[in-house]
Length: 579
Image (cartoon, rainbow, N blue to C red):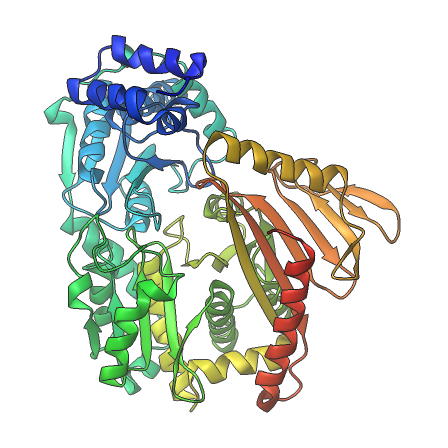
């Protein structure tokens, strides 16, 4: 047995001596005896809220998702809600979960703890998309909401997202204040575990019906869908919670030729047909694409386990399926929305879209063309929801998105929504077909009109305590000794979101960014390229976002221009020396 850090051993012994079940104690003893590295990772810290809430590997320990960390977090949340809403006779919370292993169990734990604290809980009767949880909060007049999910993470993970009364995820000050209350729960003995059955209300199909009707109301081109109702669409939920509502919403919109990947329509937290249930990856969509090829389909849609992200595959000009990245899908969607709002005379000068700082600047160019405001926010869809709430009643939110495959249309949901997105992307395809072009040709039209933007994301994984410290050192290095040139191109502007400053190196001045502080740094180069460095809030990774821009003078020159931008991206990435 290796030497164990006394701090780690002390934290593990607190669980061995505490009021924990035998199975948990046995698991900890096993780690002490046989896997001290895993023991260190399980106890070196408490799970913290990041951009996606509480998320971690399932298992025993303070840095793991288990009944105790879920129960303690829920007790802290209950205390915070009781503190924030002292005048309410009834504090209401909605709870949903996805298909992951233990998701239903964790959802029931949360419901029990909240009901034991006097709250009324609306618990979905089965798995549901995360965005439907967001919708249900406002629809039912709740003060908060919880969804048990780890989004697109591997099967070992689960998570716990908390929402506020606007249907958006927690933002400052509620995120830090809530976790402060959680940190006060220093023992499982402080948790009220015994649920009150009468305070837990089962909900389901009645919410589905209202939610789907609201989505149907977003349609802008029903005549185009009627004309192209036989558009061939293949959809896969990748064993997740989009399995029922996405096909139903597509049907509601009028699409009559939707086929599903049956092998992936079985909710299963082991995700047996994929290595990772992430629609950003080609492997996760391979079965759907294969089926689309067999059926000669036009469009492939795939949602992640909690159905808030959507992956898209379309046919190119060689009739081969290609995957769209998140920036491309967002650009198609925003272009379609603004084009149709403009055509219908709905743009009055008080409309806006929102994107995150790492999302393509192409969206802003499109918005500028249609005289629609474009707000930039920090990474995380909760900040898009925050902007919607801030301008509610004054400005009209049309749509928004982020490069990580999350999009939203309309404001009745306050999180990224793959049920809405699948329906509106299919409608965009039908509208393009009514113009005599494909989605691929529409994308080239956008590049020709607004500029050819190309992006790349590189994630560097650094696991465990040592990895977290290495990521901290990398960020410190970029701040204390920033590069003067990247790929022999001068750095002209640095935006440091932790310091809250924008430094113009050419003109020698510094100004405030006006956004909440976050551990993110951006380098803007003289040729318009943009590099963003950001530690992940939900995974043991540091992420590098690269963006370059070119001019597509002729749509027939796409391949040549694409190759030039590719070379520039490779050169910039190589110059960062990331190993």
